[in-house]
Length: 431
Image (cartoon, rainbow, N blue to C red; front, side, top):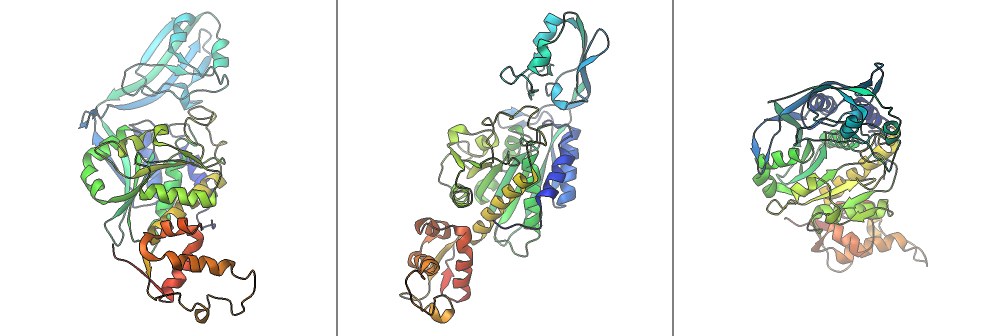
């Protein structure tokens, strides 16, 4: 994979800007984050849907706003403080201002006992409650006495926001990339997805020609994709040819791929092929290991061709949904190489057609500079790739399937394809 002008440093700098913003499925944090992403790619639109609106079997919740949350002891010392780490409060906590004894306080505390030094990420979007998160070590050091619990928050009819970016192509057929924007204080899940996708959109917007139309969605998890589908399902079913949920793409570990519910879509074939040749250690997961928005895109009756691209897969790395998933867990290189994987996916999508040779039998490659002028043992490695491609370019298989058949990387075969087209030896079939 080649380096691009879009450096990992630029992506990491953007991650540092949006990481501290407190986000949930609604509220100012989401809107602020979307505005920052819009600064990177101006085509981004910030959309909204009002609280209380029914979307399939769900209802858009009230908007939530939080100003402060803490627990202090009788000496006025704060043992947890939302302003020090925004994971210290259970997401969507209702207001509270109470003094309680230690024994009662424990019922409002959430820890990760198997990781005693981390703060867990906990939410309660659809059941009203309040609570606090801290390390197990800190909880075990709490002394008997009274404690002051304070959450200054509001729940009110408002709206839920998401970002949508549409880049028109030469055809109405669409490729869709989707990620989440609702998690606070988490680097890989979910700061990395928006950072990589907004840069991918910026690169795509700079291209002079695009065969496909590209749609980018920056959504609150689950409720966001359900709301979006409730408004756009028919269009997506008619036009989306391939879709990718992008999440947890900022760390330096191996890549992961989760297949679509059907497992054999164009998106599946493309992502698996790119990962197989560029990152052979990648982990493949069945749809039974799915996460959130892919459940909605691939649901029965929806049946969109979406698979999932990650580095370390959610639920599979110990830092997931804890305070250890911070800016130190992701890196500039991790972000950039994930971008490059998706860039290669797009490049192959743009060229993936069925091709047919225009000449019967093998063309004379030598006069076109494609064959060595001296015939000698061990000089046929590169030429054999061309001959193999020609042998299967009969209009029956698309480019990805031809490269799979001849056991070659489609990314590395792109120059061969372009040279054969330039020499007038091959033609793309109309679809």
